[in-house]
Amino acid sequence: MTMTKTPMAGMMLAAMFLSGAFTAAAQSLYPDQLREIESNNPLLHARHAASEAAAGDALTGLGLPDPEVGVSYLFGAPREVPNETDLEISQGFDFATLSGAKKRAAEAEGRVTRATYAVSRAEILLQAEKALIGYAFQQALIREMETRKSRIADMLKAAGDLLASNTISRLEYNKIELEYFAATNELDMARIDLEAARREVEALNGGRGLVLPSEWPVASLPADFEAWLAESSSRSAELQVLRAQLDKSMQDVNLRKKEGLPGFSIGYAAQLVKDNNYHGPSLSVSVPLWANRGRVNAAKAIQVASELELQTAEDQYRLMKQTQYERARRLEKAYSDMQDLYAHIAASNEVYLKKALDSGKITVLEYMTEKEDFYAHAIKFLETRRDYLLARAELYAETL
Image (cartoon, rainbow, N blue to C red; front, side, top):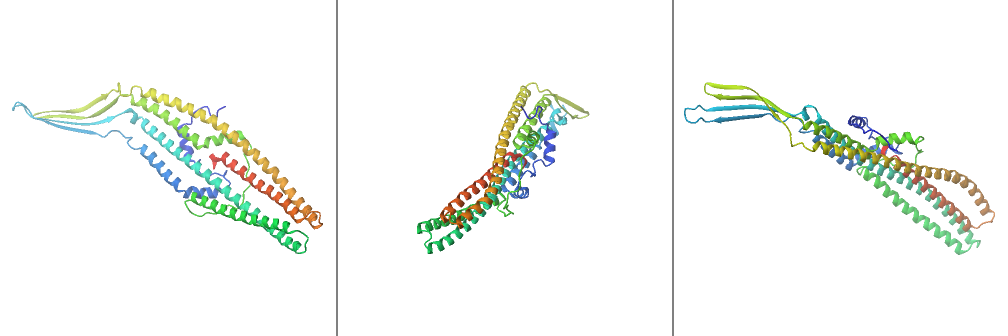
């Protein structure tokens, strides 16, 4: 099943660029940060400038050929034959220029260039979105680790009192002390990773600081996949390149046909001889019998190849997005289920474990072991939510 049955025309492509289809959209979790990164990213600046320069260069040299002026002075022979001066001024015309076929082909080439830039933009904004998600994950991870470290510190203090009263053994105390040491080291490493995540985002922002997220906002998936897919396909930067290339190939076929029509030149000619002057309009016709042979067929072959390439890419795009959607949906469900379970267990376990510890049914070491198991589940919950948001970012890559 294919996305579209007819090729995207050049006017539709141009309208999409002019309407801002490639600006930061609301599908991003962090649209404000992405807009700032788009404004400051040096690689995007360079590629945008190169794209505009190439598009502008394609529109140069599209006018008619320069007028030609020829003057010749001929000496008479024998001596009694008067000298002669010939003057000719002419302007050439061709149907490729007069019909606008040259300009339309050049404009189509410019759209290919701009669509290629849009691919770079989409790649960098997806990289930025993932980096921001990763930064928020590190923030959440550190909060969980700080809570864990604080809890183990309280346990270590309580264990010290129990050790002093010979209620627990030195071995049990040492195990709690080792857990506190490990928790401290893990928290320090997580803070280093947070700093690295910050630097990654700021590097994408041209080395400038920006307001970084500390939370993950609510993020949903498309309610109607088919309707969303149609919009996403129309905004896909990579498909836009292929559509622009197809449009260019169509314009090239038209241009080659126009180049196969006769060219002509009109002007003024004068033959100046003593006492006998001749002057008047001039007309010449150029018939391209051999120069354009085969070029129309070659252009048509490129158009057919472009149509097939676009058709294949649209089919593959549908399959890719279907896979990404299903993966994101499964992760969303897993995250949602874990969230509900996590909240329930967090409330009930804490009450149960505290009562069991206070009543002496479990030791401090057993209490710590149970809390560590719960901590592992908390980290898994954070990782699942991060993975869901990363999968969602991949799904929405074309509309960031």
